[in-house]
Length: 56
Image 1 (tube, rainbow, N blue to C red):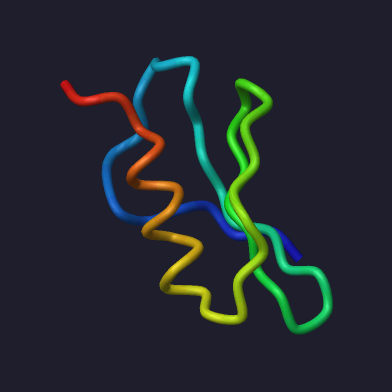
Image 2 (image 1 turned 90 degrees about the horizontal axis):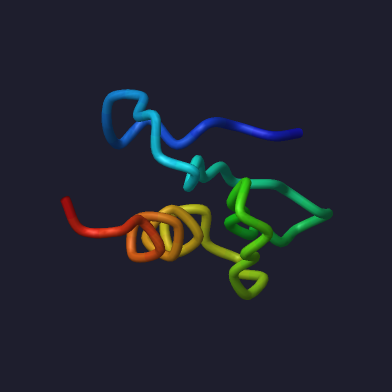
């Protein structure tokens, strides 16, 4: 039910994002407690997760 975001290498950042599916919706989540809006598109949820990542 949960898939890890494959967009980049693992980091030691406190911001480890993943996507979670709930029925026909998908949302991004982070280990810091942040949660993105529910989306019907997995790609949009992954984009939400990437935009949450702090710039290196």
